[in-house]
Picture: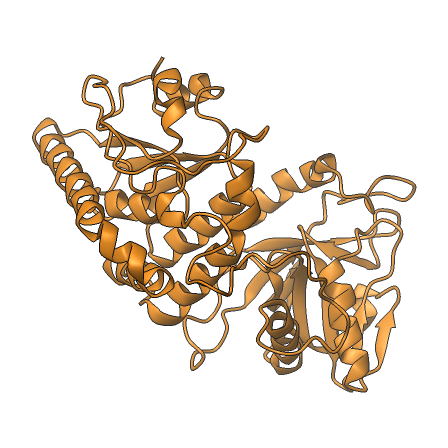
Length: 414
Protein backbone atom coordinates (compact mmCIF):
# COMPACT_ATOMS: atom_id res chain seq x y z
CA UNK A 1 0.00 0.00 0.00
CA UNK A 2 1.34 3.48 -0.81
CA UNK A 3 2.28 5.40 2.30
CA UNK A 4 2.18 8.89 0.80
CA UNK A 5 3.00 12.02 2.77
CA UNK A 6 6.72 12.15 1.94
CA UNK A 7 5.98 15.42 0.18
CA UNK A 8 2.92 17.64 0.32
CA UNK A 9 0.15 16.87 -2.13
CA UNK A 10 -3.09 18.70 -2.85
CA UNK A 11 -5.32 18.93 0.21
CA UNK A 12 -8.38 18.20 -1.95
CA UNK A 13 -9.26 17.07 -5.43
CA UNK A 14 -10.06 20.65 -6.40
CA UNK A 15 -6.59 21.94 -5.54
CA UNK A 16 -3.58 21.63 -7.81
CA UNK A 17 -0.90 19.26 -6.58
CA UNK A 18 2.07 20.93 -4.92
CA UNK A 19 5.23 20.34 -6.94
CA UNK A 20 8.69 19.41 -5.70
CA UNK A 21 11.65 21.69 -6.36
CA UNK A 22 14.79 19.69 -7.16
CA UNK A 23 18.40 20.75 -7.60
CA UNK A 24 21.09 18.84 -9.47
CA UNK A 25 23.84 17.71 -7.10
CA UNK A 26 27.12 18.87 -8.61
CA UNK A 27 29.49 17.94 -5.78
CA UNK A 28 28.29 14.46 -4.84
CA UNK A 29 27.48 11.19 -6.61
CA UNK A 30 24.56 8.95 -5.68
CA UNK A 31 26.22 5.72 -6.86
CA UNK A 32 29.02 4.65 -9.18
CA UNK A 33 29.38 1.99 -11.89
CA UNK A 34 30.22 -1.48 -10.57
CA UNK A 35 28.93 -0.43 -7.15
CA UNK A 36 25.78 -1.35 -5.23
CA UNK A 37 23.45 1.37 -6.50
CA UNK A 38 21.05 -1.19 -7.92
CA UNK A 39 20.79 -3.08 -4.62
CA UNK A 40 18.24 -2.38 -1.89
CA UNK A 41 20.83 -1.78 0.82
CA UNK A 42 20.69 0.75 3.66
CA UNK A 43 24.20 2.00 2.94
CA UNK A 44 23.15 3.17 -0.52
CA UNK A 45 21.09 5.93 1.05
CA UNK A 46 23.95 7.34 3.11
CA UNK A 47 25.54 9.08 0.12
CA UNK A 48 22.46 11.27 -0.21
CA UNK A 49 22.16 12.46 3.40
CA UNK A 50 24.53 15.42 3.23
CA UNK A 51 23.52 16.62 -0.27
CA UNK A 52 19.78 16.46 0.35
CA UNK A 53 20.04 18.33 3.66
CA UNK A 54 22.16 20.98 1.96
CA UNK A 55 19.53 21.25 -0.79
CA UNK A 56 16.74 21.70 1.74
CA UNK A 57 18.67 24.47 3.50
CA UNK A 58 18.86 26.39 0.22
CA UNK A 59 15.13 26.16 -0.47
CA UNK A 60 14.85 22.95 -2.49
CA UNK A 61 12.96 19.78 -1.58
CA UNK A 62 15.28 17.14 -3.00
CA UNK A 63 18.32 16.38 -5.12
CA UNK A 64 18.73 14.99 -8.63
CA UNK A 65 21.87 13.02 -9.46
CA UNK A 66 23.61 12.61 -12.80
CA UNK A 67 25.87 9.69 -13.64
CA UNK A 68 29.12 9.55 -11.66
CA UNK A 69 31.35 9.00 -14.68
CA UNK A 70 30.42 11.92 -16.96
CA UNK A 71 27.92 13.99 -14.97
CA UNK A 72 25.82 13.90 -18.13
CA UNK A 73 23.02 11.36 -17.85
CA UNK A 74 20.09 11.45 -15.42
CA UNK A 75 20.36 8.83 -12.68
CA UNK A 76 17.69 9.35 -10.05
CA UNK A 77 16.32 11.69 -7.43
CA UNK A 78 17.33 11.45 -3.78
CA UNK A 79 15.38 8.28 -2.97
CA UNK A 80 13.19 7.90 -6.05
CA UNK A 81 13.29 7.09 -9.75
CA UNK A 82 13.02 9.82 -12.38
CA UNK A 83 9.96 9.47 -14.62
CA UNK A 84 8.92 11.92 -17.31
CA UNK A 85 6.42 12.46 -20.09
CA UNK A 86 7.71 14.25 -23.17
CA UNK A 87 5.83 16.85 -25.19
CA UNK A 88 5.04 14.16 -27.76
CA UNK A 89 3.52 11.88 -25.10
CA UNK A 90 6.30 9.33 -24.44
CA UNK A 91 6.89 7.85 -20.99
CA UNK A 92 10.66 8.02 -20.45
CA UNK A 93 12.71 6.81 -17.49
CA UNK A 94 16.50 6.30 -17.12
CA UNK A 95 18.11 2.91 -17.70
CA UNK A 96 21.30 2.41 -15.71
CA UNK A 97 23.09 -0.33 -13.80
CA UNK A 98 23.56 2.07 -10.88
CA UNK A 99 19.85 2.73 -10.32
CA UNK A 100 17.63 0.68 -8.02
CA UNK A 101 14.64 -0.26 -10.16
CA UNK A 102 11.38 0.88 -8.61
CA UNK A 103 8.59 -1.68 -8.56
CA UNK A 104 6.15 1.22 -8.74
CA UNK A 105 7.90 2.52 -11.86
CA UNK A 106 7.63 -0.93 -13.46
CA UNK A 107 3.90 -1.05 -12.71
CA UNK A 108 3.34 2.47 -14.05
CA UNK A 109 5.14 1.52 -17.26
CA UNK A 110 2.86 -1.48 -17.63
CA UNK A 111 -0.22 0.72 -17.29
CA UNK A 112 1.22 3.24 -19.76
CA UNK A 113 1.86 0.49 -22.32
CA UNK A 114 -1.67 -0.83 -21.85
CA UNK A 115 -2.93 2.66 -22.70
CA UNK A 116 -0.94 2.68 -25.92
CA UNK A 117 1.81 5.04 -24.77
CA UNK A 118 5.36 4.68 -26.03
CA UNK A 119 7.54 3.68 -23.06
CA UNK A 120 11.31 4.17 -23.20
CA UNK A 121 13.87 2.97 -20.67
CA UNK A 122 17.13 4.54 -21.81
CA UNK A 123 19.88 7.00 -20.88
CA UNK A 124 18.60 10.58 -20.64
CA UNK A 125 21.12 13.28 -21.56
CA UNK A 126 20.22 16.01 -19.07
CA UNK A 127 21.36 19.11 -20.98
CA UNK A 128 20.16 17.84 -24.35
CA UNK A 129 16.80 16.42 -23.28
CA UNK A 130 15.46 17.94 -20.08
CA UNK A 131 13.65 20.63 -22.06
CA UNK A 132 11.72 17.92 -23.94
CA UNK A 133 9.68 16.97 -20.88
CA UNK A 134 6.32 18.50 -20.11
CA UNK A 135 5.88 16.39 -16.95
CA UNK A 136 8.40 15.03 -14.45
CA UNK A 137 7.75 12.92 -11.38
CA UNK A 138 9.59 11.24 -8.50
CA UNK A 139 8.63 7.58 -8.34
CA UNK A 140 9.02 5.19 -5.39
CA UNK A 141 7.24 2.55 -3.37
CA UNK A 142 6.07 4.81 -0.54
CA UNK A 143 5.17 8.03 -2.35
CA UNK A 144 4.07 6.25 -5.59
CA UNK A 145 4.88 9.26 -7.77
CA UNK A 146 4.84 12.94 -6.89
CA UNK A 147 4.98 15.97 -9.14
CA UNK A 148 8.29 17.71 -9.79
CA UNK A 149 7.68 21.40 -10.37
CA UNK A 150 11.21 22.40 -11.29
CA UNK A 151 14.81 21.20 -11.60
CA UNK A 152 17.67 23.65 -11.15
CA UNK A 153 21.20 23.16 -12.38
CA UNK A 154 23.59 26.00 -11.76
CA UNK A 155 21.87 29.26 -12.69
CA UNK A 156 19.25 27.65 -14.94
CA UNK A 157 15.88 26.32 -13.81
CA UNK A 158 13.63 24.05 -15.88
CA UNK A 159 9.93 24.11 -14.99
CA UNK A 160 7.23 21.51 -15.60
CA UNK A 161 3.71 22.91 -15.37
CA UNK A 162 1.73 19.82 -16.33
CA UNK A 163 1.22 16.58 -14.42
CA UNK A 164 -2.01 15.26 -15.90
CA UNK A 165 -0.66 12.13 -17.60
CA UNK A 166 1.48 10.90 -14.70
CA UNK A 167 -1.29 11.71 -12.20
CA UNK A 168 -3.71 9.64 -14.27
CA UNK A 169 -1.28 6.70 -14.33
CA UNK A 170 -0.81 7.03 -10.58
CA UNK A 171 -4.55 7.07 -10.00
CA UNK A 172 -4.95 3.89 -12.02
CA UNK A 173 -2.25 2.14 -9.98
CA UNK A 174 -3.46 3.22 -6.54
CA UNK A 175 -7.04 2.33 -7.44
CA UNK A 176 -5.90 -1.24 -8.01
CA UNK A 177 -3.75 -1.23 -4.86
CA UNK A 178 -6.66 0.00 -2.73
CA UNK A 179 -9.13 -2.43 -4.27
CA UNK A 180 -11.22 0.34 -5.83
CA UNK A 181 -10.65 -0.91 -9.38
CA UNK A 182 -10.34 -4.41 -10.84
CA UNK A 183 -6.80 -5.71 -11.24
CA UNK A 184 -6.51 -6.06 -15.00
CA UNK A 185 -2.72 -6.27 -14.88
CA UNK A 186 -2.03 -9.11 -12.46
CA UNK A 187 -0.46 -6.80 -9.87
CA UNK A 188 -2.14 -8.19 -6.77
CA UNK A 189 -1.89 -11.54 -5.01
CA UNK A 190 -4.44 -12.55 -2.37
CA UNK A 191 -2.60 -13.78 0.71
CA UNK A 192 -5.49 -14.49 3.08
CA UNK A 193 -8.93 -13.28 4.08
CA UNK A 194 -8.57 -11.33 7.31
CA UNK A 195 -12.31 -10.88 7.83
CA UNK A 196 -14.91 -13.28 9.15
CA UNK A 197 -17.76 -12.48 6.77
CA UNK A 198 -20.30 -14.21 9.02
CA UNK A 199 -19.91 -11.60 11.77
CA UNK A 200 -19.12 -7.94 12.20
CA UNK A 201 -15.77 -8.86 13.77
CA UNK A 202 -12.42 -9.76 12.26
CA UNK A 203 -11.09 -13.29 12.38
CA UNK A 204 -9.42 -12.34 15.67
CA UNK A 205 -10.24 -9.86 18.42
CA UNK A 206 -11.06 -6.27 17.54
CA UNK A 207 -8.56 -3.41 17.69
CA UNK A 208 -10.49 -2.06 20.68
CA UNK A 209 -9.19 -5.05 22.64
CA UNK A 210 -5.66 -5.07 21.28
CA UNK A 211 -2.42 -3.62 22.56
CA UNK A 212 -3.98 -1.88 25.54
CA UNK A 213 -6.38 0.19 23.41
CA UNK A 214 -8.78 0.27 26.35
CA UNK A 215 -6.26 -0.02 29.16
CA UNK A 216 -6.46 2.66 31.78
CA UNK A 217 -3.96 5.44 31.68
CA UNK A 218 -0.71 4.94 33.53
CA UNK A 219 0.09 8.58 34.23
CA UNK A 220 3.58 9.04 35.58
CA UNK A 221 4.26 12.04 37.76
CA UNK A 222 7.10 10.70 39.82
CA UNK A 223 6.59 7.29 38.13
CA UNK A 224 3.41 6.04 39.78
CA UNK A 225 2.41 2.44 39.10
CA UNK A 226 0.10 2.00 36.08
CA UNK A 227 -3.54 1.31 36.85
CA UNK A 228 -5.36 -1.92 36.01
CA UNK A 229 -6.29 -2.42 32.35
CA UNK A 230 -9.98 -2.04 31.65
CA UNK A 231 -10.12 -4.96 29.22
CA UNK A 232 -7.86 -7.85 28.37
CA UNK A 233 -5.01 -7.46 25.93
CA UNK A 234 -4.95 -9.34 22.66
CA UNK A 235 -4.09 -13.00 23.12
CA UNK A 236 -1.29 -14.16 20.85
CA UNK A 237 2.36 -15.18 20.79
CA UNK A 238 4.82 -12.41 21.28
CA UNK A 239 6.86 -11.85 18.14
CA UNK A 240 10.54 -11.04 17.89
CA UNK A 241 9.77 -7.35 17.44
CA UNK A 242 8.05 -7.18 20.83
CA UNK A 243 4.55 -6.88 19.36
CA UNK A 244 1.95 -9.60 19.11
CA UNK A 245 2.48 -11.67 16.00
CA UNK A 246 -1.23 -12.52 16.07
CA UNK A 247 -2.12 -8.84 16.07
CA UNK A 248 0.30 -7.96 13.28
CA UNK A 249 -1.13 -10.75 11.13
CA UNK A 250 -4.77 -9.80 11.36
CA UNK A 251 -5.18 -6.08 11.87
CA UNK A 252 -3.52 -4.43 8.91
CA UNK A 253 -6.69 -4.60 6.78
CA UNK A 254 -8.56 -2.45 9.29
CA UNK A 255 -5.73 0.02 9.82
CA UNK A 256 -5.52 0.75 6.12
CA UNK A 257 -9.28 1.26 5.97
CA UNK A 258 -9.02 3.57 8.98
CA UNK A 259 -6.38 5.73 7.28
CA UNK A 260 -8.49 5.94 4.12
CA UNK A 261 -11.55 6.89 6.18
CA UNK A 262 -9.68 9.67 8.01
CA UNK A 263 -8.33 11.16 4.79
CA UNK A 264 -11.76 11.07 3.14
CA UNK A 265 -13.90 12.25 6.05
CA UNK A 266 -11.80 14.39 8.39
CA UNK A 267 -10.58 17.96 7.96
CA UNK A 268 -6.80 18.27 7.40
CA UNK A 269 -5.06 20.03 10.28
CA UNK A 270 -8.03 19.58 12.64
CA UNK A 271 -7.20 17.07 15.42
CA UNK A 272 -10.76 16.96 16.77
CA UNK A 273 -12.12 16.20 13.31
CA UNK A 274 -9.59 13.38 12.94
CA UNK A 275 -10.54 11.91 16.33
CA UNK A 276 -14.24 12.04 15.43
CA UNK A 277 -13.62 10.27 12.14
CA UNK A 278 -11.62 7.55 13.93
CA UNK A 279 -14.46 7.07 16.41
CA UNK A 280 -16.97 6.87 13.56
CA UNK A 281 -14.88 4.25 11.80
CA UNK A 282 -14.60 1.90 14.79
CA UNK A 283 -18.27 2.35 15.71
CA UNK A 284 -19.25 1.32 12.20
CA UNK A 285 -16.91 -1.68 12.23
CA UNK A 286 -17.80 -2.99 15.70
CA UNK A 287 -21.24 -1.65 16.72
CA UNK A 288 -21.93 -4.27 19.42
CA UNK A 289 -18.49 -3.95 20.95
CA UNK A 290 -18.79 -0.18 20.89
CA UNK A 291 -21.97 -0.35 22.97
CA UNK A 292 -20.20 -2.47 25.58
CA UNK A 293 -17.09 -0.31 25.86
CA UNK A 294 -18.32 3.23 25.15
CA UNK A 295 -18.34 4.36 28.78
CA UNK A 296 -14.88 2.98 29.51
CA UNK A 297 -13.47 4.40 26.27
CA UNK A 298 -14.88 7.83 27.17
CA UNK A 299 -13.29 7.51 30.63
CA UNK A 300 -9.92 6.91 29.01
CA UNK A 301 -10.29 9.92 26.73
CA UNK A 302 -11.32 12.14 29.62
CA UNK A 303 -8.46 10.95 31.83
CA UNK A 304 -5.84 11.52 29.14
CA UNK A 305 -7.17 14.98 28.36
CA UNK A 306 -7.42 16.03 32.01
CA UNK A 307 -3.93 14.80 32.91
CA UNK A 308 -2.41 16.44 29.85
CA UNK A 309 -4.19 19.73 30.53
CA UNK A 310 -2.93 19.68 34.12
CA UNK A 311 0.65 19.21 32.97
CA UNK A 312 0.27 22.01 30.44
CA UNK A 313 -1.03 24.31 33.18
CA UNK A 314 2.03 23.53 35.31
CA UNK A 315 4.32 24.27 32.37
CA UNK A 316 2.78 27.72 31.97
CA UNK A 317 3.75 28.49 35.56
CA UNK A 318 7.25 26.99 35.30
CA UNK A 319 7.93 28.34 31.83
CA UNK A 320 9.33 25.07 30.52
CA UNK A 321 8.03 22.76 27.79
CA UNK A 322 6.03 19.63 28.58
CA UNK A 323 7.74 16.27 27.92
CA UNK A 324 5.35 13.38 27.30
CA UNK A 325 5.97 9.70 26.59
CA UNK A 326 3.57 7.10 25.22
CA UNK A 327 4.34 3.38 25.03
CA UNK A 328 2.21 1.81 22.31
CA UNK A 329 1.17 4.13 19.48
CA UNK A 330 -1.14 1.86 17.48
CA UNK A 331 -2.84 4.22 14.96
CA UNK A 332 -2.20 7.42 16.89
CA UNK A 333 -5.53 8.10 18.62
CA UNK A 334 -4.14 8.69 22.12
CA UNK A 335 -1.15 10.51 20.65
CA UNK A 336 -3.50 13.01 19.01
CA UNK A 337 -5.44 13.41 22.28
CA UNK A 338 -2.21 14.41 24.01
CA UNK A 339 -0.43 16.37 21.29
CA UNK A 340 -3.39 18.61 20.45
CA UNK A 341 -3.21 20.07 23.97
CA UNK A 342 0.54 20.67 24.02
CA UNK A 343 1.88 24.23 23.67
CA UNK A 344 4.54 25.09 21.13
CA UNK A 345 7.95 23.75 22.12
CA UNK A 346 6.50 20.75 23.93
CA UNK A 347 6.84 17.23 22.56
CA UNK A 348 5.20 13.82 22.77
CA UNK A 349 7.55 10.88 22.17
CA UNK A 350 5.55 7.76 21.33
CA UNK A 351 7.08 4.30 20.93
CA UNK A 352 5.67 1.58 18.65
CA UNK A 353 7.25 -1.81 18.01
CA UNK A 354 5.19 -2.66 14.92
CA UNK A 355 6.44 -0.91 11.79
CA UNK A 356 3.06 -1.01 10.02
CA UNK A 357 1.20 0.50 12.96
CA UNK A 358 3.89 3.20 13.19
CA UNK A 359 3.44 3.98 9.49
CA UNK A 360 -0.35 4.33 9.80
CA UNK A 361 0.01 6.46 12.93
CA UNK A 362 2.54 8.72 11.22
CA UNK A 363 0.15 9.45 8.36
CA UNK A 364 -2.84 10.06 10.63
CA UNK A 365 -0.87 12.34 12.96
CA UNK A 366 0.50 14.28 9.98
CA UNK A 367 -3.04 14.64 8.63
CA UNK A 368 -4.11 16.05 12.01
CA UNK A 369 -1.33 18.65 11.72
CA UNK A 370 0.50 17.52 14.85
CA UNK A 371 3.78 16.28 13.41
CA UNK A 372 5.71 19.19 15.00
CA UNK A 373 4.59 18.07 18.47
CA UNK A 374 4.89 14.31 18.01
CA UNK A 375 7.78 11.98 17.33
CA UNK A 376 7.15 8.29 16.70
CA UNK A 377 10.01 5.95 17.55
CA UNK A 378 10.24 2.39 16.29
CA UNK A 379 11.40 -0.25 18.75
CA UNK A 380 10.82 -1.95 22.08
CA UNK A 381 10.48 0.48 24.98
CA UNK A 382 12.38 -1.73 27.43
CA UNK A 383 15.26 -2.39 25.08
CA UNK A 384 15.50 1.25 24.03
CA UNK A 385 15.33 2.80 27.52
CA UNK A 386 18.70 4.53 27.18
CA UNK A 387 17.67 6.12 23.90
CA UNK A 388 14.34 7.17 25.38
CA UNK A 389 16.13 8.94 28.23
CA UNK A 390 18.26 10.78 25.70
CA UNK A 391 15.19 11.81 23.70
CA UNK A 392 13.73 13.18 26.91
CA UNK A 393 17.00 15.06 27.49
CA UNK A 394 17.69 12.90 30.58
CA UNK A 395 14.81 14.59 32.39
CA UNK A 396 11.73 12.90 33.89
CA UNK A 397 8.69 12.76 31.64
CA UNK A 398 5.82 14.93 32.83
CA UNK A 399 3.29 12.42 31.58
CA UNK A 400 3.59 8.77 30.53
CA UNK A 401 0.81 6.76 28.92
CA UNK A 402 1.09 2.97 29.07
CA UNK A 403 -0.92 1.87 26.06
CA UNK A 404 0.82 -1.33 25.02
CA UNK A 405 1.04 -4.88 26.39
CA UNK A 406 0.05 -5.22 30.05
CA UNK A 407 2.74 -7.83 30.67
CA UNK A 408 5.43 -5.29 29.77
CA UNK A 409 4.35 -2.52 32.17
CA UNK A 410 6.55 -3.49 35.13
CA UNK A 411 9.50 -4.46 32.94
CA UNK A 412 9.38 -1.15 31.09
CA UNK A 413 9.06 0.85 34.31
CA UNK A 414 12.20 -0.81 35.63
